[in-house]
Image (cartoon, rainbow, N blue to C red; front, side, top):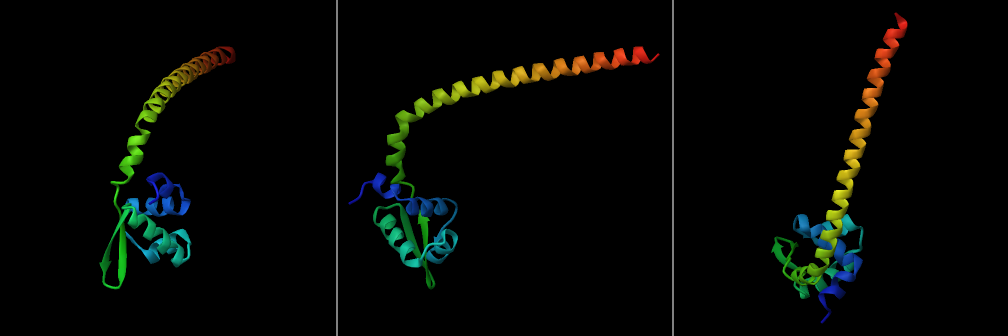
Length: 127
């Protein structure tokens, strides 16, 4: 049996999972949206279903697939220590951007004051 990481490493499977995040889809809908041949979509859905990533139900003549997020918990658990790393870096980036915004606003205020002073000076020279 393939590991969770081997299953989601395949780009077509990730694309299918991304589609199923928003709503359940039929094979035909997935095929049209991803522009993949039906046998390819079916093959990837079989792998995803066998691994527990998707569940299917029958609706009249068509089979509808929906995401089962439970297997993705393994990926989330594995990513947890890295999130702390990203979080620290994102916090530093946010502080840097806040400082940049403050500098930009200070410069804009200074320009407005200079423009206002120039206008006053120009008015005085015209008299």
